[in-house]
Length: 569
Picture 1 (cartoon, rainbow, N blue to C red):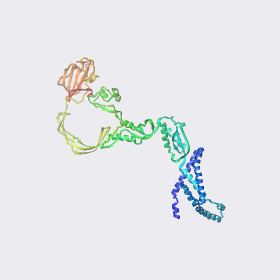
Picture 2: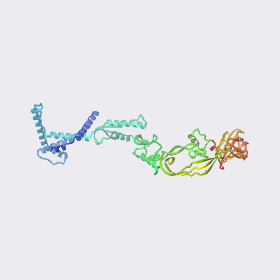
Picture 3: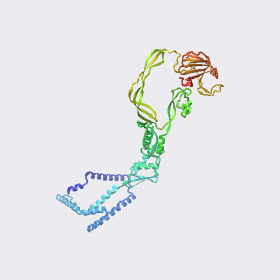
Picture 4: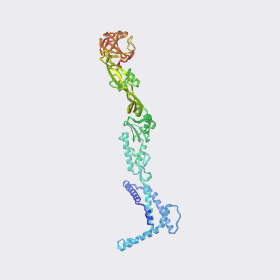
């Protein structure tokens, strides 16, 4: 029997948990009463009387009726579970009272023997079973009330309920925090929430209706409609777009990268610093997902480089890239648009993707292995001349490389491993050591004279009778008699009168290039002469169809006239 009673007792941990809960509830009540000394107003008293007092009075009246029926040995049938429990307790009270009186009697006798001063008190104690029932009912009612109800503060803004929190202080804290967030987000230091529209009412509320301060702040944010807590996309530190859907921007970014990913991709990332942060933002930045996707897949004006090719003209480069001459010059300040050299690198404006996607692919392929060249000196050949004695043979290698592709264009190739499958065979060449004559061409040109360019290669309108509308040369003007020099070494193939060009000299440089020098006043070379680079060959004049003293300089390459400015330093 003793063992069964011990098993029915709650263990120490359970008793401690119950006690901690009661203790916390009492602390909450004490704290609230200190913070709100006027909480027990008429409304609260009415609520307590209606929801707690009247039910207790009805339960007590029913209990008295049951007690009366029990005394008359009339035990009524009832479906009220609490009533059944009370009937059971009431039936057990005589035995419980008997046991308790027996214990107190033993204690009184012990106290009487010891002559204690409490003898009279113990002798006068008369316990009635109803005392225990009343105490149990009171404790149960208080416990139920504390577990189901508490004191809270309900907030409304402009007539719309925002939620219920523990106290009015929590509402004030949420309002203050939201005001500060709005000031920082909108950069408006004078912003404040209209306190006249804010209503806070304190009273007894069900515990299940309590919300967190964050939830109240979120509801107030939605009601004000100025800022919102969202997921913001940052590109290079600048906010681009925002959405309230978690994970949506990340999915759009992944979809953008999937357009470049292949089966051999080992890495894919953005060149720009891309971040997604969750924070308060101006509501104007929040967009629907379709617009964000469209923006990420769009293009923007960007700067790229362009390498000048043979035959390029400044105006055509600008036109081909949708720019004016002034816009192209603005991107290349200090550049002389009258002089373009093959290989020059210009900055141009071109539409580029909004985000730069880098895709690194692992590729395996066979590649030729270059052969080396072994030289054999030959004194019968001129310096700079070579003759193949035995051809080289390329080898083969199995290459594995990481290929970097930016927005679909390959920009780099890094070899990870290389396995030679076939060794290359070296080529043998004879190399001339005989000193070359000074008139041999060097392969590059110098300016034929000093002066100012007055007419460029291409279309023109001179107004001179007989002059061509398409100019195949450049005109370099200077005073009468200015020396004219050979642009490179070679052999004179023409020296004499040439119609509209007046007195003219032509030099064959032996490598597909022929240079022309027109409108001269005097000629210093004859056909068949070998001339070296920089040798004086004529004097500047204005013979033929000409409007003043100048040199008409032309470069002919493989039979076609080309722009001399692309070949001059």
